[in-house]
Structures are given as C-alpha cells and as structure tokens.
Amino acid sequence: MALDKPYLDVPGTTIFDADQSRKGYWLNQFCMSLMKAENRERFKADEDAYLAEWPMTDEQRAAVRARDLNWAMRTGGNIYFLAKLGATDGLSFQQMAGSMTGMTEHQYRDMMVGGGRSAEGNRTVGEGGNAQGPAAQSEAWKAWEHAQQQALAAQIMDEHAQNQTGAAPGAGHARVTASVYSSHVPAIGAAIDLGKTEEPYWQPLFAGFEPSKQWMKDNLPDVVFLVYNDHATSFDLGVIPTFAIGTAASYEPADEGYGPRPVPVVEGHPELASHIAQSVIQQDFDLTIVNDLKVDHGLTVPMNLMFGSPSAWPVKVIPFAVNVVQYPVPSGARCFALGQAIRRAIESYDQPLKVQIWGTGGMSHQLQGPRAGLINKEWDNRFLDRLIADPADLSKMPHIEYVREAGSEGIELVMWLIARGAMADVAGGPAPKVAHRFFHVPASNTAVGHLILEDQA
Image (cartoon, rainbow, N blue to C red; front, side, top):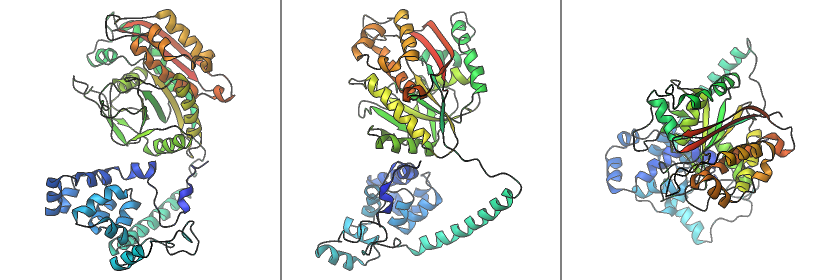
C-alpha cells in the first residue's frame, strides 16, 4: 500500500515531508549558507559561481536564479530555508508569500489587511475557493517544463520501443528476507585494514564468519537496513537523537581519530529510506531524519565481516543510528516494537526489493572504569538463546540487567531487538530458520556474537 499522505489534496500547499527533505537537502543547505554575510556577498557578486559550489540539481539552480519560490518548493525547498534567499534580496516574508499567489504585492497586502485568505473553499482540491488551480509560474519555470515534457515524450517513446522486445519490469512489494546480528568491534576493522586476519589471535574470529560470507553470496539482498550506534563521530553532545535514519544517497567513512577506514563509500537507498521514515513516524515512532551523515566502525565493520573487502559494497544500505551512549537510551521493548513497525513500512513499499535487517553491537563488554574488561560468556549465550526462541520476553529485560551482566557498553544489544522485531514470527508468522550462529571471546575488549535468521514468511 502507498503511504498515507492526506495533505496531497490540500490546494496551494506543499507539505515538507521526508521525500521533500531528501530531495531538497542541498537546495536548503545552500539557503542556510546565506545566513553568513560573507556568503551573501559572494552570492550577489557571482550567482552562477556560488551556486556551482553546491551539488544541487540543474532544476534547483534554475529555480533559484528565477527566484520562483513555488518552483523551488516543488524541487524540495522549504519556505523557512528559502526565506534566507528572500532576505538576501531584501524581501519581507509578506513579499515572499505574496509572490507565490499570482497576486501583485499590493493585492496580497490588501487581502491580508482585509483579514487574510479564507479557509472556505480552500480545504480540498476541487472546491470553489480562491487558492485552487495550478501554482503561479515564472516564465523560466514554464520554459523549463516545456523542455522537460519534450524530453519525457522522447523517453516514453524509447521505453515503448524497448518493451516491444522485452518483458515489462516485475511488480510487487519489498519484503524482509533475513535478519543478521553481529558485534562491531573497532579492533576487528583495524585487523582487516592492517592485514592481520590470519594471525593466530584473529584467525578463529574471522573463520567464524566464513560461512556467513558464503551465505551472503547465496542470499544477497538489494538493501540492508543496518542498525548501529554512532560512536561520537557524526553525533556529538550538541544533538543526541534517540533514533536517526539516514536518507542520503551515499555515506562516507568517518574519521574516528585514526583517519577514515579504507573501505568503500556506502551507497544508500534514499527512496526506501524516506518511505520507511514517513511510515514509521506515522506509526508513532519519532525518528530523526539525517540527510548528511558519515558512518563509523559501527556500520563498516559488520559490512566487512559479511562481505569481505570488495572495491564496492554489493548492496544499498540504510543506516539507522540508535543512541546507546547517553542515558536514557531506548528500552528493549521500544526497540522490539520499532522493528515491527519497520517491517510494516518495508512491506508497504511498492518495489520488489529484498531487504535484510541487521542488528549490531555488543556483546558483553565494558570499556571504562575499574570494571573495564568485563566479559560474561554465559549471559551472552543465554541472550542468543532467548533472542531466537522468545524475543518478546527478552525485550522486557531492564537496562540495569544489561549493565550489571554485560557491562556498561553491553547495552548496545538492545539494537539487536530492532532486527528481531522485524521477523515474521513476531506478527504471527512462522519461526525463522537459524542459518548460522557463532560466538567468540575475545576480540580486543569484547565478546563477539553473530547470528543469521532467515525469514520463513
């Protein structure tokens, strides 16, 4: 099913949702840059040169040059960001708003003095109010649309010709095919990067992931929804989102103090990510939408463990960062319920994608204080048993048990419950198949756990 967007039939109105945010990210960032006087001067001195510094689309640049705010909003602009452009031109908010109505400045001002535009007849498209019909367009926008219509007509004719000799693309919806669970120890990444994987200390650990690499070759998804925590790289203490979803087209490896890891750039799936964001928020989970993000070892180490060290990652990735650094952190029950909401969101996406959900972090470890070095093998393996057999009961475990039994950083394991919540049996379907299970101690300061569950729905 399609996302519920009831605001699409409100006339003369563009709601800035996750799709718009993703689409307009660089346009809005450009507008934000105009808050600095030196940037405003540079923009005024040479608009084309300044616009060329921003990775906007050609259409977005054209909308800026035309100062057509309706056009800019269609390409993802938000009025509060676009207001920085208007301010640079010396316009008031009333002048900017009036420019989008097709009225003259005086007509708009007179309407506002007279009490403003009435909601009567302007609540739904097709009513008889005075905000119905197409948006006011600049001549530049009209010319652009004419050129685009010609290009689209040529494309349709070309696709029609191709379809005469081949089958049409298959229809269907996205589905969750498996969940993968893995620790994400930074020292594992260092061992890979420094060529130490065959050393006696590391060889048993990497051997435990060899079956997983083969399984991945046989069960390659289109998209990995990867749950991890940021380790004070992209998120500092200025902003601490509880749940943050990456909606960008790509994500560079972060510099965690040693320089960025020599791994490929992570390619995202912004369309599915935006869909999930809107769907999950509509299910009453509050997500932070992130359009610009660097990813640290929490994401890249599990990628190495499952895919090796390719020149390019073979899947698209949607990063999903969970705060497990500063308390309060989300409960296991909240994470488990969130996984169920994510599955529903994925299954409502109208493209036939195979999606895996990965939960990363843990297992038992403590990196700070006199109790540093804590490992609890027995507790870790009971956690794996319960994750497989009774995740609903496991989700009720209080935070303090994670801390007492698995160490202060063992709280990362709540992220595994997001992945487990996304499996079919949680919603009444068949139990998943355990494709692989592995446990190893130690990897630096940490107990390493790993599990692959195949969805049987």
